Length: 451
Image (cartoon, rainbow, N blue to C red; front, side):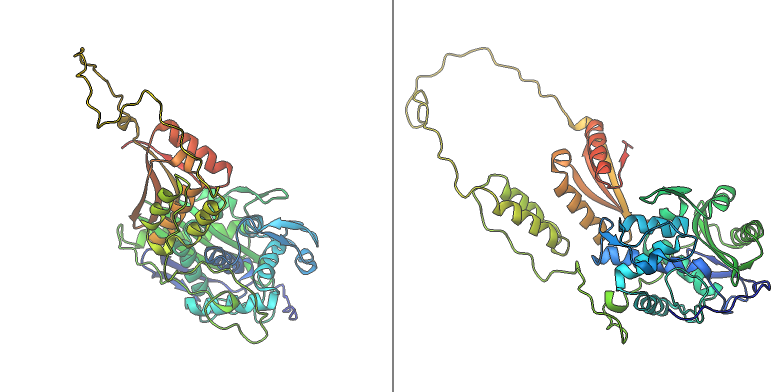
């Protein structure tokens, strides 16, 4: 680990930027390109790469991470992890994003790249790809270290990418408290979230060298503003100044504007398409990429299997690689022989045999109970950045929850806010049951009522 930078008692330099998140237009700046210590604003990049890694299949939220001595020995703020402890990756994300836990942030970096230095190089490479030209990372947590620097402009750019590149995870920054596995933790930004109308993130930071830093975002109606501040003298003073900056942004931004999303950032380092920097340890990465073709499974004597296979083939082939493999595995485990049919009952007369005309009887009136009128409900299983991601989630959820979602329609509703993955055509009871079962397995879900 590089030597820590000397810490002085003098006041940290002040820098600020205000941006219209919808368009990327800068509404105010002061010392915005001055390189300063970012403190725990660093963890935004740590979490950005973690979200990117989850979407690419490098790691899953449920994977167990073994805590190294380096992570366990990080100074506060920390979750209190101990060397050798195993904890789900999801709890490390929550602890780093909400509690700003340094041990959790280091554990995330080591889990993804094998060591802290390699992860810091990946962070810096991602920053460059994002346009953060004056940022260099040396660690995953933001504690003061020589050469670990950023600017108000770069951190504002990072905050905007966090909002638009990973909308399905962004809500973590608005949680006042959260379960971090070993205990419940409180948000370091809770005072501002409670005090400022529309605030929903993003990240605080403090060291003696940096002062009190904050990247904040708030949404009111159709407007969303990001404000960044470096060098506050206290939490209260910082929060008051950032509130003023956000007010300035809402006053200057147009009431309506076309959302110009930032271009997605390609994964960097050993987790991405680029070659890892010298000294980076090579790792085997599970990549859920595009498939060249989708194989039709061979016919099997299991009645329901062909229907499932046809349903999978009706979906865009790009989204079904994993699902087809699951179905084939299920089909392969089915019995190889079909039971012999029962003998035809003796009282059945073949159609070709002439039969006496039946005695006319009173016509039977059959009343069919219509169920279409009550199948006006649906469920939502998340909002995603692309239609492809939404379709993929719908397919996986449908396969995992066939019993309650049978007969429903998979539908992606696209808007300027993202792509909602919905199942429609359910009864109210069916929607409640499906949501309850999905939530019990950790899948986000809420009901959609009739219009």
